[in-house]
Length: 139
Image 1 (cartoon, helix red, strand yellow):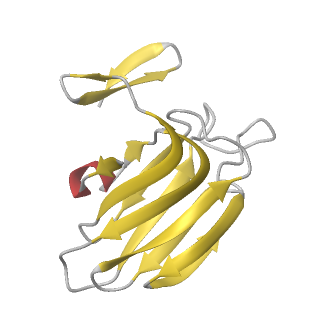
Image 2 (cartoon, rainbow, N blue to C red):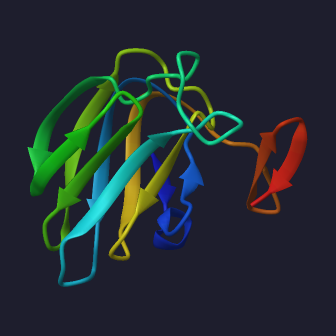
Image 3 (tube, rainbow, N blue to C red):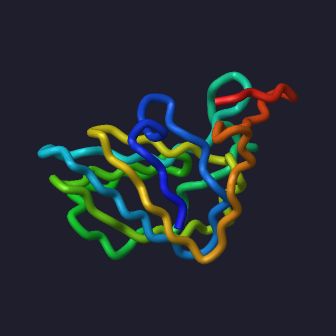
């Protein structure tokens, strides 16, 4: 199971692992408020989606527990979870490539991800290494 902390999910978020097959997203929160979790496909070089962009959030969402709402497009999916957190399953139509999407969250949530097939990000000293336009960026 991959674990993502509130600090990783906050703000710009964190790149995802490779996801294929059905995955369970288990969102936990110690706050007394609703929270939001988002999966967003990486945008192209000028900050948009186009015909060459992966449609990472097309697929089958199911098994909602304490999920208030789900909003999706081909590139972004967001859930609003109730107090204490919630969970859902997502099976993408196609494998989501390593670092092909970002996970983001509000409300101090953390995420546990259980997947049929995962591949973890290369890290250096615990920091994610991301390649963008041929440049290695340390997050």
